[in-house]
Length: 488
Ligand code: BGC
Image (cartoon, rainbow, N blue to C red; front, side, top):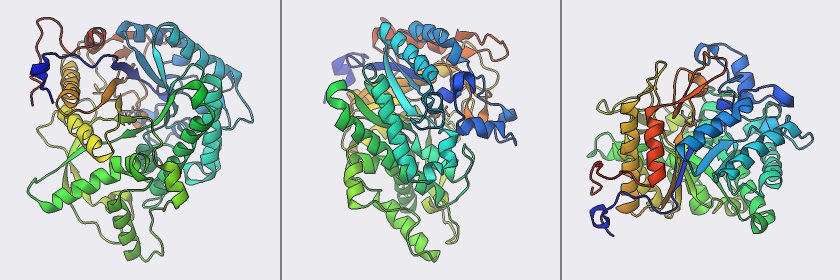
């Protein structure tokens, strides 16, 4: 394999996808505009109770529902070749089903898709990014098997309606987050707390829903539309706290298996959960006097249905952790106690505007290599990565841009030195937006949004201007510029 110096370039591969990402609830606003139905985040935020920073909501957010042209200007200013956004399911289908279709919702997404294409920007569409229609949640949401079929009909409807133009589909964004925060810890909408059961059940149904929607595309649309379908999987990178401790090494393996492995192993390897996950949960369930494991099992038919249902790997990477083995008492029932691993932020790692995000660019390179080795060397798109500022953002975010540069350097190393097939990078996020329970206190945008001004003006951060240069030349450095060596 050639080293970077031999290749003598900081170029990204030809045709590398340069993007930015957003999600409907975080940017659109227009929560009840033009017949949109409620989703779980509308309900969750409207209930108040200090679960979200200052009880803020996404009712208005960046106003993208009415200000799409402003977003398009930002995308064009960056020179992006791809733009990832999500469809608000309940804007299209107010009760989640095709029983009633909201034409205004179709019009909005047609406008977005058509104007992207007119500007040679390829749309990447996420069908579901945390905002399940409330009506679907009322029937059990991801706790309930029925949701698999409802999701499949929704996916089918989107392929039919937009698939003549949309060729990149992501079924579900971060099922791990939805399962754990939404159905186990109750920190995210729909706020369900069912430790030790809820997350496993929700994840089980989401995996089946994803697989079904992938097959629907393959069987009924692929020949004609010639597009691709995947799922966005998030994961930390993890390393043993004490590299010489067997216990810490095992805990690290457990941690990664319960994180990226939970979804990637069934989809990319063999239709089933990682062995470690099955063993640990079943053992602990037995010790708790249960007849069956808290981790549901797939039938052989389901395994065959799930295996191989992603046309590429969509990875969302933000941070890394050092992992120390810990013990959990037998009667504790939760995903976290099943993993029995303490997540440690190395104090040497810089932090950004959000407490959980220790900045570890090299963790991405390691995670990419792990994915290559563990999940059959898939083509990978990094569909989210970013660094936040806090409530008092600076437009000249020089330090943040350094993090981006370091991250892009690590991606080049992964491509050039580790032979990982990375085909694209989507920065999170195009705009400052509603950052879930942190509300507007955390700013991930390439563009600043002034939320105190009713017109919600967008202003490029220094990072946006620098990112646009990289996008334009498809290379990390311009003439005479240097960055860290790519050799190790
Ligand atoms: C989510 C985004 C979120 C970002 C930063 C990801 O988990 O997909 O919606 O804003 O992380 O927290």
